[in-house]
Length: 323
Ligand SMILES: *Cc1c(COP(=O)(O)O)cnc(C)c1O
Image (cartoon, rainbow, N blue to C red; front, top):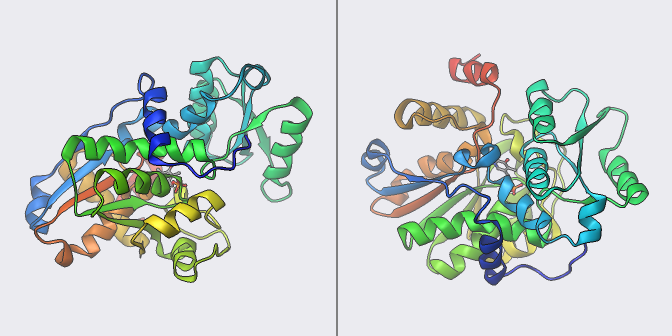
């Protein structure tokens, strides 16, 4: 998937047209409890209700829908143990493209089953002795498969940008937008939409404290690499931002904030008790940062992207029970 140009808001518009008949137009929910507590108006864009349970379906679909006939016939490959795998597997199934997903042999059985259920051909590797990028590249070369990256590709970023586009189109301009940050596809795409549809909106990326590579990169002005962070926010266990995502983030984002894991659990509990919905720890990053900035947000109109809701139920109960 070679393409050198950074995506723009026009690419987000084109992505929306391309994927609109496949995706769920996810709801924007509000909570009187949260509004009263903040003394503000908060709009939650709920991608936990997207197909596959997370926004990743949008970027994957936008990338796969642009492959040519030769690429489609040969198939695609992705490496991921999480939501990107399911996004690629489902997009491929809907478009009739064969998909190979490289997953760690010890990935949760539920995730492997979900990926296989979407028709993905799962290849397992040993994460302690083998390198998934090598396996992916070897497969891509040998069988002519197209590698679909989880965040650092213009088509993926443009697809993820449709989340914030829908939010602004539904609720109008905002004072601040809080976005979960892993490799930066969602944040970069959100920034493209925000800068066009709500030019004065402050845009914040939010990472777990332990995985603050994005914050360090933002401060330093160049991509900083860290070791795989220990955090319950598994969608943000990323060692570094991408070239495309960082170029956009550096230019268009106002700041990158970090939050502790314990506070992610408090947000999960709030979503369960007050809004009756399951949100995975990574999906709580944005709201958690907003809670920590509550005083400064008084009287404002705030957007929060809830990025996903995929979590094993046993794990979910344990986290809420404080085990
Ligand atoms: C992938 C993912 C993220 C991080 O997205 P990036 O585009 O990598 O920054 C956040 N939340 C969920 C639920 C995810 O699956």
